[in-house]
Figure 1 (cartoon, rainbow, N blue to C red):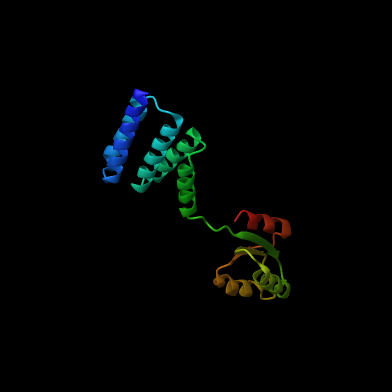
Figure 2: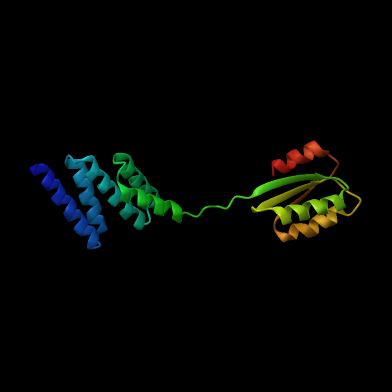
Length: 174
């Protein structure tokens, strides 16, 4: 029992260092506790969580997150570590994914125009429209060049007629 009290005293001193803004000293104290003393899984988890929080606040986000995950792995009931991990994950910039629509066309300006307008009008999610166009004689290419300035359409002009399948594959690989 005496050893556990000593470890708890060391932990409390480390917390005092954190509260005093002496994070480097606190990290060293936590490292000493983990390296030199036997601890319960609960205390070890608290130390991992505290270490992760300090590292994260110092800008070492990768190691900070790893320590917080280790805290959860060490003690699945550490609600503070779960809360910290949730805070970290909700703060991350999540790249908004776009749905890509690939259209292959050849001399179909009227139908293509209706198709693109329909996609824009009915899409609930951000879309990226890729139109692969074989050489046309009905003004399709000029229409696509005008539409590509709107930001959601990428026009890919083929130098020669390659057909639907190859054009679609070209769009998928873009």
